[in-house]
Length: 127
Image (cartoon, rainbow, N blue to C red; front, side):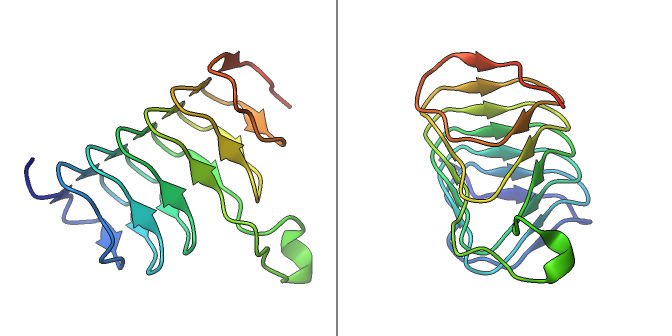
């Protein structure tokens, strides 16, 4: 596989990044995040420290990953978000802290995910 392709406006602080990764404009990857091989991270996505993104995951533009359940109390969660191999996160989807998305699962654009899913079905939960 090839070296990661990181857009000049993206920030990638982690050293734990696989081969063939593509990171779009204005995306950011914090130190301590783990990114597998062949992952696509589109524009405007922020990957927090502790998140695990396994091989072949596709994250659509502006998908959001919450790092804390109650953002106003300033208490970060110790439950990372895990994206299993080959799953797809649609544009503008939001995942709450501690969520695990199963292998090859598809989360629709705009979905709000509040519970982990191990199935490979499409989530159409919206708020």
